[in-house]
Amino acid sequence: MKSALPNTLMLVLASASFLFAQGARIRVIAIGAHPDDCDIRSAGTAALFAAKGAAVKFVSVTNGDAGHQTMPPRALAARRLAEAKESARRLGIEYEVLNNHDGELLPALDVRKQIIRLIREWNADIVLAPRPNDYHPDHRYTGVLVQDAAYMVVVPHVLPETPALRKNPVFLYFEDNFQRPNPFRTDIAVAIDSVIDKKIDALDSHVSQFYEWLPWVDGKLGDVPKDPSERKAWLKRTGTGAINPETRASLVKWYGPKTGNATKYYEAFEICEYGAHPDDARIRQLFPMLR
Ligand SMILES: [Zn+2]
Image (tube, rainbow, N blue to C red; front, side):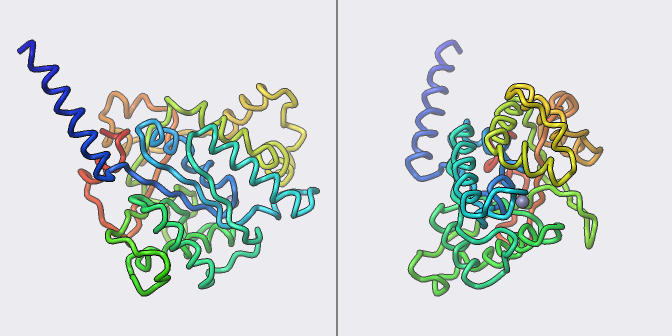
């Protein structure tokens, strides 16, 4: 039995490198409306994916040029692009910001084509996006645009200059709190305790948002600490909340009772009806952190 372990280990390593050579590296693309949306909803999951060797890309469909109380749009767009790139550097992923105006996004054909092209070029296994019943029109239409792309990514005559995917990806929604017409359903809860500080680090790179614009909108600009490390601790306190019973049940389902009940920080996703229909075994294949 003593010699069995190295042999088994070699077999596992050999099959892992074989899978890698066959292009089995998991490929994830998250699509948000603004250059911090993907970070808020999935930075922890992205960090876990990256640590497991997956290829992860965040996309912002708008350039975020309306998200500030004083900064002029053009300068703001440049600043937010730099913030997004810094967030990606901290997470070990890629970030692309499309040059559509913030606050003016419509579910139009030209933007749908941009999204089809991005999903195809990334050869995505998993696509993350908002649900189409969010309060913000840009979020809402990003949800619609990704839904509208969900079938078209496999249709060769649509956008023929970018080859169609042969397999439809799994499309997942980011979590939200909107109740109508139907509330978010937690299908997959990812425990992110081990990377919560990395997530806060990623959010911290969006200085214009978390320390300027969002507190200003909420009338809480005076609450933001000046010291950089105090600022991060404040962000962690204010940006994380309690776990509801549905999420707790999902954590227990995926991780077992010990880890599931002990988890403090999570990100949750709902499986979209469009695209591939994964069973639990397929989800465990696609989400190596759940194995
Ligand atoms: Zn947003």
